[in-house]
Image (tube, rainbow, N blue to C red; front, side):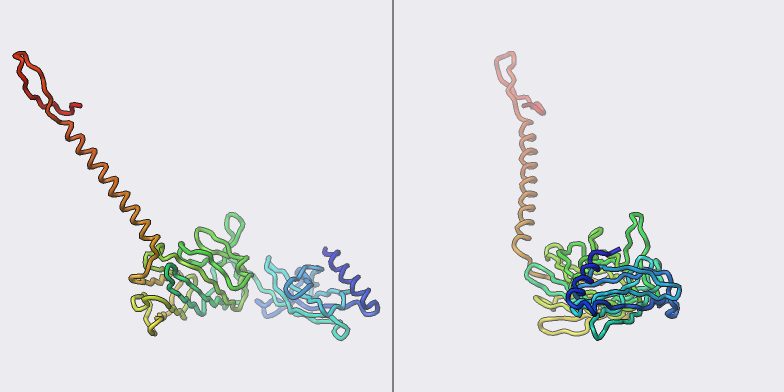
Length: 338
């Protein structure tokens, strides 16, 4: 299935060392959900290249005993090999390895798991939120230790458009530029309904998710609300910057200094719980005041225009001179006369 790259690697290795040009990777795929029983008839893909760029070069399937083998591989000590099994659409990588004259035959063991759609087993073992108050922004950095304590891989329920969602980050909708520390997460999250969402499968174990974003001060109106994405009993919030003494939160205040304040959850928070911070009086850039000043001026102008129009209509109810037969004048009030 991948003849071109593998053929090129073999050719290069044969030219460099024609007598010792072939190696072998063999191994077994087991079911981690069912006590590491062998998994038969499972696809196994071999990737090769540098540590930062691996390309599929060969594919095979396990036999009834869960065993697989890749033969006739170049003995290139500068190349990295990575076998991985695919089950229920989820890729489970094995260990990275290299082949050389002293390491021609490598054994590999790959653990795959059964998949589950619902309910979500995910929890957060910790959730840290660090907020830095700048002159015109709230700079927010979050760290989530996402854990799957079950023995199955959580893949999420399939939606009508065939996509899946395994995690939604309910950060304030006025956020700007969510940036993930890991490029892997940056590629796998997308924005749906003003929320970053992902279809990343979550196998048993934990992953640390780190990301940052900004909230414009004039958009926050002095309040930041963060809905919990996962159940968590270890929640910590730290606020640094200007006027931290005026910051309040619906969590317990745990520590305080001249330039920061911390809040902690005194009990486990369930998913959909809301953390609310109020920042009191915060400095807002002049553009904010200018915008509201313009709106106020426009409102005054509209009120003035209405008042002038009303005054003119009232003035139209005036006195008009009407001639009479005896050549004298009399005044007659005519409503609505032009």
